[in-house]
Length: 413
Image (tube, rainbow, N blue to C red):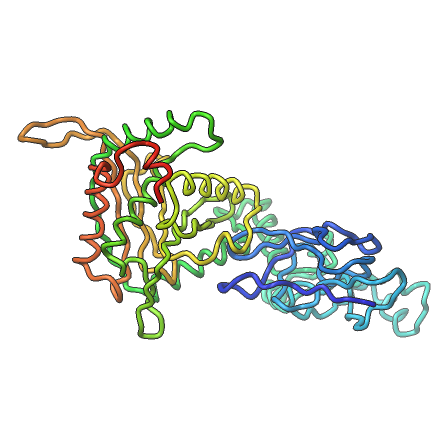
């Protein structure tokens, strides 16, 4: 029995996924649970397992194709079985859009051959496919599609191929002073979501400088205590736990403005912005308010490694209620972050630097760190945002207000 393989959903923020790689070829045997192909959503790359067993009869969409959720991408069945719905032009159905075929003839004689139906000479015809955008671009630029096909050696011409052709031609003529880069699915989604965030929620920011002397001392003591563990306690882990404690006094920080109502979440699910080569991803530590600092550290360590190796699953990147973004490791002292919709707060963490500080009427050198909170003014007023950051400052400068010994701090939930 022939079974369809359907493109899975990519989550709440996108209905299109990019097929990165097929791990099986038509004719290959497939077992239930085999990694059939890998997809890229707007947030992560993830493998797709086969729910069917048999032979891969046909692949509908090739690698590098954008496909909508719910579309049939392949068929699995017994060897020799015919697929129930033979797709038009199986090999070149690309980007979940219709592409019109374009016949490229080397000369006029080829056109006559096609009409006369000479099957031998028909084989000499070159057939390519061009997207509507590519055809329109070629027409505007007065470029032959045949030239593009010869340039990129492709049977499917996309707008990006024409852009690359123009850029290279201009460069060779010495007429170009800039160049264009093709964007990935992740980069396009980041751009879209950042724009939507600023247009959706009225942002305001509040900053506070924090003396990190006690936290630095405590972190060293904690990591000395964990010498045999596979993970280390980072400042991000500590900040997540302390911010979660502060939210207990200000629950509106952990909320979302939805349909003219404010949805307040009981669980504090903390996202951590992780920069990748081609974009940004935010894996989430669920229920930080119910986790110990060691559990938070272990989850962050695992999530960051998975993000860098494209191994995050959908459940790892959804459900966040507040986000932390840290650029301190790049020597950034302070910055403003854009809220990760539909959340109401994001904390931007700067580096820890030595600064002269006035204390007890004397100038002393302290290890200082800046936190800038971006808040959705529809939910969080300025006084509330300021009070929340001051509570974080109080806890960070006096961590003994929360915990008194390493074992309790590490494993207290």
